[in-house]
Structures are given as structure tokens and as C-alpha cells.
Length: 190
Image 1: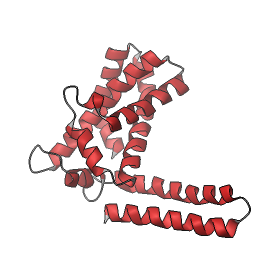
Image 2: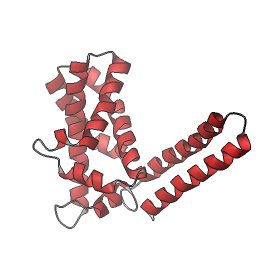
Image 3: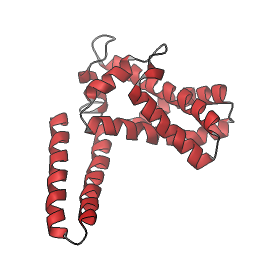
Image 4: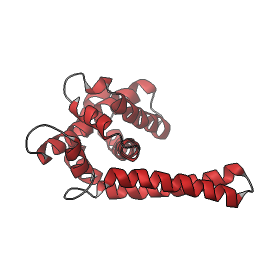
């Protein structure tokens, strides 16, 4: 799904980044994969925690100054900004402007998809799960669940390592953590 958003919104995001941050088109192109990665990480964390209401608030705040003050958008934008600074060595002032302009464009495009998915121009949690979750345009949540499954396996490994040597006991705890997280994700998707 994010690949489709990048195809659809990539040109506008490039324009927004170059126009607002004053970077070259080549630099802006280098930022797009980082933007996609940041958006996926941010949406994954919200979906796996069951925060569809928070996502609803973010998507409904697009337009005007509402998005800039939304906490979830701020976290995703910050992820993007940190990647720009770390991978491209750009100063925080430039990276912040680029991240805000680029991510604002991408979230705006995703909001358009959510509105187009419904019966009217309203966005609901059903729209969010339909576009990001099951059926039709999905793909994205399948990828997100795959990523989350890997993360859950990593959680088990980390828990085993933390207990140090007590692999059987840690594995049991880690398995319970993994199962509980899987159940929560299953409830979200079910």
C-alpha cells in the first residue's frame, strides 16, 4: 500500500520538500524511501497497539494547522527527520522543514485514499481498517503484520537474553508476551 501511496504522492512530496526545505531534487529523491519507512513505522506502532482512534484523529486533522499539532503525526515526522539527519547529514533546521513538508504531503494523500474509500467524505475507523487493513487496497497491513511478527520474535529473543541463561524460563515468559501481543493484534484485525 505504501508503494502505491509513494507512486501517487511521490511527485507532490518531492515538490513540497524542494520548495520548502531548499534542497535539490536529487536530495529530495533520496529522502522518499526514508519517508516511506518512517510512515510505515509510525502506522505500524499505532495499528499494533490498537490505536485506530488516534489514527482517526490524525487523518481528520489534515488541512489547516491541525496536522502540525497532532502527536502521532509529530512522532512520524520526527522519525523522518532523524533519518534525514542521520543518513544525509543535513542540519536539523533543514531536515525538520523537509520532514514536515514531505510527510504532510504523504499523510494528505493517504487521507484522500481514506476519504475515497468511504460512502462520504468522512473518515472512520472502518475506512482506516479497510484501506490499511483488510480487503481491497490492503497489502499494507499484511506487510505491517509481517514486520510486527518479526518484531514479536525479536521480543522473545530479547526477553530470553535479558534473563541471561535461564532460556527455558525466559522463553516461557517471552512466549507469553509474544502470544499476548499476537492476540491483541488478532483482536485488532479480527
